[in-house]
Length: 126
Length: 201
Ligand SMILES: Nc1nc2c(ncn2[C@@H]2O[C@H](COP(=O)(O)OP(=O)(O)OP(=O)(O)O)[C@@H](O)[C@H]2O)c(=O)[nH]1
Ligand SMILES: [Mg+2]
Image 1: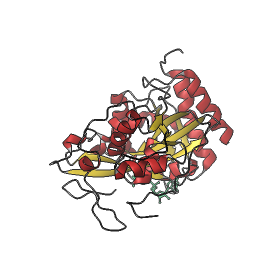
Image 2: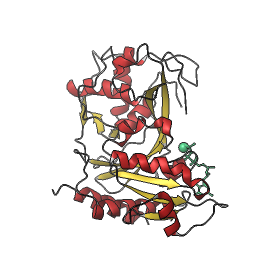
Image 3: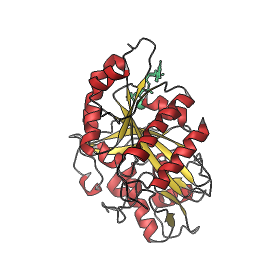
């Protein structure tokens, strides 16, 4: 567990330096425009040009330029809270910089085929 | 690890053919073996997401809230395992303690179900975990994580103690062992396939 200071800022524990506040990172935008983004939405960069992007968006794009990752992995890599990462991503999806997959279990009710494929994959591990 | 402000290039990317992702929660009370379980099945070194909550326990997803509220971040361990050329499974080790109730709304969204790890030395600590899953309507299976000095009970005694439905899977596992851990997840997914109402697609 990594409790943050009471004012909501985060401190990088390697450098002891306070990172930007979440609402600053996202330019004051609070609600992700795409509520379809969740922890396991798979994303990758769709464009290579980073002009007009803010520093946080550039960091995010650099991670995504290497290939496909889940939103959670990108957030972990950037050491940003998931909620902040989703807001940054939502803008980049809207601007065409990021491609995101549709969720595999959209209604929260997984389809039979998905469950069967998961089962087959797990059995192959044995 | 590089500085937090430079881009880390330590990410292990997915195979480019992977197009679908599934998520399972590995939950249970404090120190029951969640992180160990995730690590055992993960193909990558487990990572951590940070979920922001107010001190009062509400999950902060709408960031307009953050300013002026006292918040805390909770780290959730997760790992992944590529199951085929097109499918990847994510395992999220979600703390089961009551103060993390609000975390679950975000973490549980889009997950197939939950595997509840339980320790027979502290069975009562699992009650609230199971109750919460039932309240959320998230299907689950229970895996008894065996510790060296943990008391052994019969399946019937454990089912009775945890008040499990007859169809809820109850298995034993060793979170340090890959085959044993895979078997526990298989019991859960098999249950999801055969006992849960589903859309027919
Ligand atoms: N004997 C035995 N020890 C285990 C097993 N699983 C985990 N442990 C040990 O139990 C301790 C706690 O395991 P963790 O995986 O950290 O548990 P956790 O649920 O993630 O703990 P918190 O995140 O702190 O709630 C560690 O020392 C593990 O090595 C198991 O199956 N058998
Ligand atoms: Mg843990």
